[in-house]
Amino acid sequence: MPRIRQADIEEVKTRINIADIIGERVALKSAGIGSLKGLCPFHDEKSPSFNVRPGQGFYHCFGCGESGDVFTFLREMDHLTFVEAVEKVAARIGFQLTYEEGGGPAPETSGRTRLFAANTAAAEFFRQQLLTPEAAPARAFLGGRGFDPGAAAHFGVGYAPQGWDGLLKHLTAQGFQRDELVTAGLLSTNQRGGAYDRFRGRVVWPIRDVTGQTIGFGARKLYDDDQGPKYLNTPETPIYKKNQVLYGLDLAKRDIARGDPKRVVVVEGYTDVMAAHLAGVTTAVATCGTAFGSEHITLLRRVMGDDDAQGEVVFTFDGDEAGQKAALRAFSEADRFSAQTFVAVAPDGLDPCDLRLQRGDAAVRGLLDHKRPMFEFVIDRKLAGFPLSSVEGRVGALRAAAPIVAEIRDRLLRPGYERVLAQRLGMDPTDVHREVEQAARGGSRADRRREGAPESVAAPATTLATLPRTTDVAVERDALTGILQYGHRVDPALLQRALSSTFRTPALDQVRQAVAGVDRTKQGWGQASVDALPQALRQLGGEVLMRDFPARDEEHAAVSANALCRRIVARSLQDEQRELDGAIQRFAPGSDEWRAASVRRRDLEIERRRLTEE
Image (cartoon, rainbow, N blue to C red):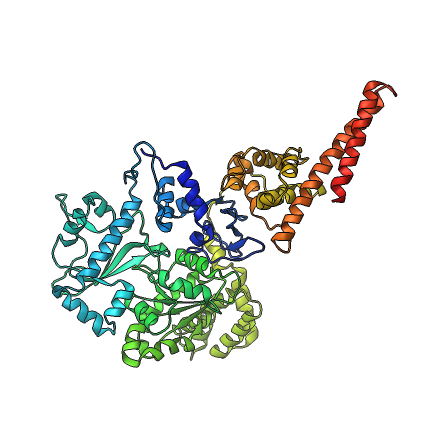
């Protein structure tokens, strides 16, 4: 298979800012000189330990140990091959790649890139079809819900024609194979192996991932003779996992990240997202044919960066029984958020789309003014199932609601909700407190989720935390961090001498050797140093590369890096002096060996003092 020229790979890596790529998936905040921090996309965490250093083109998570460059990130997140990752970044910056073994682009055989391309082409086809005479019922449907052509264009809404092979013919004419289109979920197959359009005679919404790539579709039926479900979505494919995507997040993510406080509004459907955005609630998102779950929470938390309790997640539900059940399902996962969770139910149980139609944009915006804390909402739902006029009913209600109050982690909030519950039930607050405490001892939802789950045992790896707390470790650690982050600002001769000096900590000495052995004139040499380490030391190397370097600004960091290198070299000279002291004692005074060793020791002392006084 043709290979991309190495020079092109390095040029693409040089031109792209890794923070721009990662920032589309993770909310990044400044974390010191040249460093950004956010919640790790590779494991679930509530305090950010995922660090990105744009200057080095490298990321590292101090929690799970994942690290790499921009290509590694895309390969892990999007399950791409290395070539696909390079091609994706090159296409983003408009860089024309050249290939060895013939010079042409590599054949598209891996699949994922083709699936993205097929969905993008299908989205454009559907969008164009919305303008045709056949699509009049689709335009009428949208218009009846308050969406004009501009709104449809903004959200990329389209129309799937009624025929069986309109999309099939269009995409095969563009060079796509039937098997690819079936894999992409755009075609269905019958028992005889024939293929036909999955979406026919429907309004179609493109479903995009957080980066804006189209990965699937949701479609609503228009015609009475359509025997299919009211809403039909793309099936699970290699690029579309319904429990890992939120409709509208690609449009909402910027306003979510910029909000103060950060706020996400979770609605129930595609038209609700459109109505909310058009009304000014531009942080609205919706699930795609599935209940709101833990993976949706993980996705939102990365975008929100909610490492504190200032953010808000507001769930809007229909007032009917299905909506109430959806609220309770959402509550079962809500403790995974650091943000505060709320529920907003519109008057008369209207969804945001109907609310906008009947009462205007201001009513949709005002919906958030009437939000209620999720705990309060769920407590009331629990109480609604009991006859509170009887003692037995009140006791049953207390036992049902006490575990809900016991879930409240904030020690200042829980007593308040105990009083609220006591007032609603007309019971003694002491009795309520006792029942809540008993429920708390029974374990939290998170504890119960973990119950019985086997614990994976990770292979031991050397990390900064496992190293001894000695002066030598601190000096060597800081020196390596300074070299990896500011080596370009260190005097070249001094840098070479520091990297040639043996370190006293074996693990850090292996990191030093890896740094000394790479070509430091090439982009990404810091990561190359980490990659050169044995597997058991790569997390340590990543931590040294990514940790905060103690300095006020880059100028002070450069001064400090040079000083640390001088200290390493001076320490090495001192070690050699000690060896000479033993030799001088062994040699006969006045002998040639004795004089040579004495002169050498004197020269070392002069050099050491010069280094320490600079």
